[in-house]
Length: 242
Image (cartoon, rainbow, N blue to C red):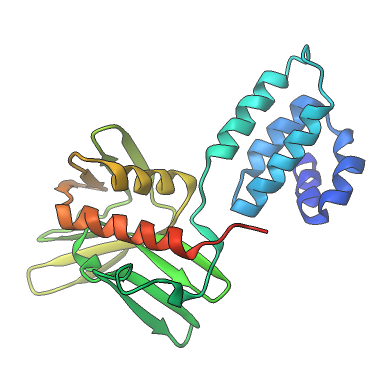
């Protein structure tokens, strides 16, 4: 019930915050806020506003103040793979070098991806629907035998990340001796962090695709550069939230 109560605050907007949020203790308010989670950039910004209003009323001796400040710091550093978009023609020919753009007339959106995306174990791509730009991640496997993948690990020269797939993994026979498995994932803050890390790394990027079996891959220099280009295109398309 308390979680539902906070959810209503998100829907009600800023005018209801000052009236309703005082009904929860500092402890319950923070726990419930974390349970709901920042599912989008706009919700994250709304949570930041709620935290700031709560913090402004706290004394320095409040035992929960440190936890509030720490959670606010974590929230503020999160990046989400969706934003309001500029016109797709904002991308120049130079921006689109190595990338391709296609139009889905049924879903009424553009897709921007690397020209060789299907050959990369990790391939981010953009969906641009006129109002928003969404970053997605394709995880791809091709091989001689099924691995029935359900997760992936990404290792850079700085960090190791684990990705548990929360979408259905699709399977198909590519040729007589080659099978393929793939999944499309939303760009959560963790996936955004991985893509940013890969974009700035100067070392190797290694991938482990894992399920009933596992297989290791290493991104080529071209595949890493493709990720950089998609992230750059995303940055150039997105505009600041009003």
